[in-house]
Length: 223
Image (cartoon, rainbow, N blue to C red; front, top):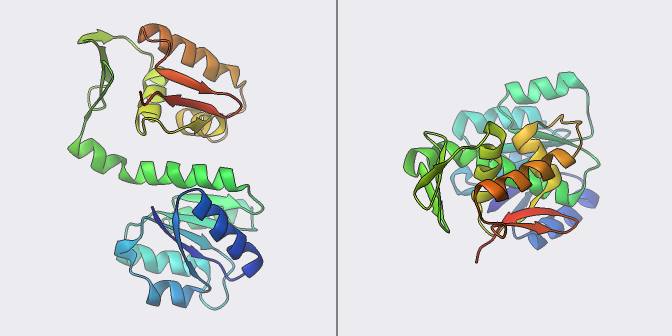
């Protein structure tokens, strides 16, 4: 995934570039809004990480100009957590909003989640049917079949299976799953997730299909 990081503070940008590269991302750096808009082809980018407090053209204006040219996903990075800033950012077309300081794992998970959401419409239009192992998932009709026989899932069970199967073999953290399937403001017990995983394993009649990655989360077995 090709990412453009727009950040003027080297104490933030340098370790962030290294960390994201370790996470498997290809990262280009722009130190101000002018450079981001003039020196980088938006069509070649998969996502933009955009600091709000840039010198010269601020992040909000950069986002507005990006949106006039491209639908590339944008995540704001900012030290400001006030609601008015968030509202403005989303109105300008930002896809997510991460307040400093943040952890690298959290940011990487948000990047992947935003990218999946941004490409979901295209995937749905070209590939409504997803098949792996002995299971087929039809996102258009919200139906799941095991060995050709339909299995009845709850709405949350279906959304959970759909998320995990969006990247077979990849590990999804508990926090990421709760945010994407439930709600970013979820305050309930994480045991809710374990209950749904257990139910899915039983209904799919394959206890080894959804693997537990101890201390991290869950993944669909790639075997």
